[in-house]
Image (tube, rainbow, N blue to C red; front, top):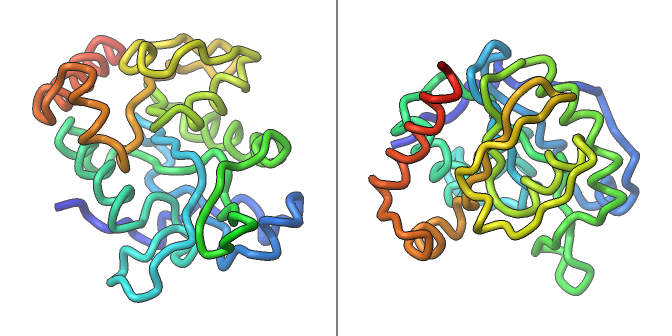
Length: 211
């Protein structure tokens, strides 16, 4: 079982942010990064969902103000990282810190726009440089795209990039794309892994990067 993060480890980079009016209007909280600032890993998601106010404390970043704190995605990725061997040694954040509402259903989320990603990118860059991790684990296509954008690079086929390390010179770290935890059961099977094999492959990749 994944451990719920310590609220004292929430890394608030600004008291408020109004760079994206559509997000500012609909968010409940800014979903800041959480975890030790000397962590070996930075885990990056896309953006928080609306969240579940009826859940236990795993309500989601839009309601807790802490990244990857939903029952579905948050617990799953934290369990994977713990099983890899980095429990307590990972910092979790999102490429976009605020919930992006779907115009047709504001209780559901959409993909962040390119402008929203660009507006939030300075926060992501600041976090990665502050933590100075051995590796950045980007969960899913959109998170991977956001990290690559810092390097002025584009993603060419997401599934082919999973677990393929990418040197990030400007960030002085290495990007390792992972499947998004919400679709983990579907995609790791298509990549030829079961869960234990997937965890072992991540561990092996990180062991090489750590030297």
